[in-house]
Image (tube, rainbow, N blue to C red; front, side, top):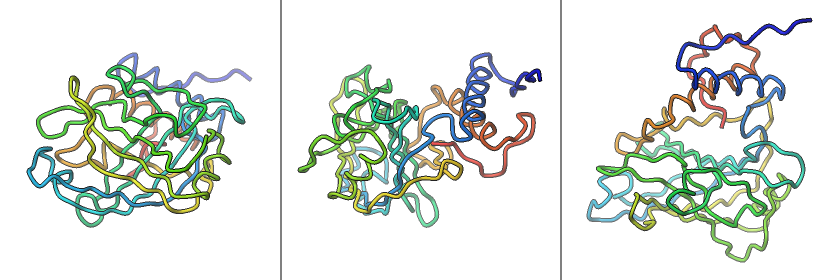
Length: 257
C-alpha cells in the first residue's frame, strides 16, 4: 500500500519541514517526537527577591515560595543507558496569581555564551546546567535562564529513567536557577528543590507544558525560533493522536514537552 504524503500546515519551508518531521516521528513512536519518556515529581521553588527591583520583573524581585511540578525526561528517547539530551520541564503553580502558572522548559547544555543555546547529550544527569536555549525577555534585557544542579552528596547519576528515579528517591535534589545576558555573568534568582519520589509518565498521556502560553508579562521567551518550535509541537501532537494535519488542534492543546 502506497503511503500518502503528509499534508502540512501553511508556513515557511522550515516550519513545514519541522512539522512534518515531528509528525512522522510521533506517528512511528505513538508518543511525542521529543521527550517521549520521563519521570514526574514535585518540589518547591524559592525566589528570594531583590528588594531593589533590579530585575524589573515583579516575580523575580519579590520573595515567594511556589509549588512546582517537574518532568525530567530523555529528549531523544534513545535506548538503555546511552547518553541522551535531558529535559527538565517546570510548572510553577500560581506564579502570576491563582490559576496562572509559569512553564519553563530547560534542556541539558553548557554554560558558555554559545553552549547555553545548544542541547547537549549527557552521561550524567547532574554534570552540568539545563538551559532554556532561547532567550527570555526580562525587563529591559534578554537573558537565557538555566538550572545548575548541586551534587549535595549525590554521586554520579546516570541518564536512564531508572537512574533518574533512584536519584529522586535517594535524597532531595537541588538546582540553582540563574539568568545571564550576553556579556554578563550568571546571576541567581531562585532555588528549586525536588523532594518527592518520581513516578513514570505514560507515553500516551504525557503532561503538556507550554512556555508561550504559560509565561509572565515581564518574563517571556523571545520570538526567535518560536514558529519552528510551535510547528514541531503541533506535528508531534497530531502524529501521536492520529489527527489529520488539516484538522484544527484541540482547544487548549499544548506542547509535548
